[in-house]
Length: 461
Image (cartoon, rainbow, N blue to C red; front, side, top):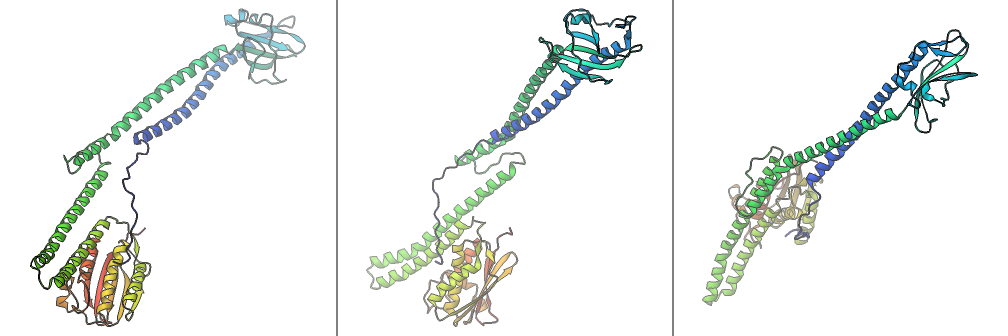
C-alpha cells in the first residue's frame, strides 16, 4: 500500500560455465612446476658445467705444473725436460693435446703434437700466475689453454709455458650432461603434471557425488544430499540442504496461505450466491458487505505473501528515516489536521525491504492519526540488535486487556471510522516474518497509545 516499488527481474537466465575448475588447478600446477624446474634446471646446469670445466682446467694446470717442475736449461741454452711427460698424445701430430715453451727473441720449444704449428702466447710480462684462456687460432678446433710465466735457473729469459687441449672433449661432456638434464627434467615434469592431474581429479571427485545427488533430488529419488563427503565439501552441502529446507518451508507457507485464503473467501461467496439465488431484497448490501470482507482477506494474505517472498533478501538495508519521511508526506495529505513530529537516529537502518517497511510504518502512523487527538510523535532509537520505532498519539488509547485482541484480523479501534481492521494484523504478521516484534503500551507523555515496533538491524560492515 505504501511506496509500492516494482523491480524488473531477468527471466529464463541459464547459468553459464566459466572455464573448468580442474583446468584451472592443472594450469596453475603446470605453470608452477615449469617455473620451478626451469629455475632448478638452469641452476643445476651452471653448477655441473662449472664443475666439468674446472676438472678440465685442473688437468691442464696439473700438466703445466709438471712441465715447469721438470724444465731446465741445456748447455746450448735450449729448454729441455729432465723427464718426458707421460701423456702419449704429446707425441702424436695434431692429437689435440699440446705444450709449448716460448721466450722473447728465442725460438719456441713445442711438443711433437704441434708438428708445424705454434701457439701464440698472450700472457703479460712478469705474470707468474696460471692463466686459463681460450683460443680459436686453430681452424679445426677451439683450444683451451693454461699459461704461466716463469724464470728458469741459469737463464735470464722469462719463459712462457703453455699447455693446450682441444675443447671437443669438454664440449662433448657438457653436451652429454645437458642432454641428460633435459631428458630427466622433462620426464620429471611429465610425472609431476600427471600427478597434479590425478590429484585434481581425485580431489574434485566428491563434486560428482553432489551433482548426482542433486540430479536424484530433481528426479524425486531423494530430497537431501546425504552422502558422506570430505569436510571441505560438507559446508556447501549443509548450506544446500538448509536452502532446500527454506524453500520447502516457503512452499508450505504458500500452500497454507492459499488454503486459508480459499477458505476465507468460500463463506462470503456462499452468502452472495445464496442471496442471489433467493433474489433477496438486500442483495446489493450483501454483495458490498461480503466483497469488503473478501477484499480485507485478500489484502491480508497478499501482505503476508509479499513479506515471505522477500524474507530471503537478508542483505536488504533500508534507511528508517527515509521511509518515515515518505510516510509522513502521505499521511499529511490524508490527515492535514494532524501534527506529526519525528525525532531520533536518522542514520539507523533495518534489515527489511523498503516496501514492507513503508507498509508497517504507514499502517501504524495512519492509525495514530486516525484514532488520535490530532498529534502523533514518532521516535527512532537504537535498541542493540533491533532498531526500535515508537509511534505515540494523544488519543484515548486501548485498555490493557484488549491490546492483544486488537491484532486479530478484522478487529477495529473504532467501528465508526472507515477501515478494514487489518492494519495491526498485517503489521504483526510482516514484522514477525522478518524476525521482529510489535507491542502496544500506554504513552506516558501523550496519554494515548504507544506502539513499539522492533525491527532487526543489518550486521555491521
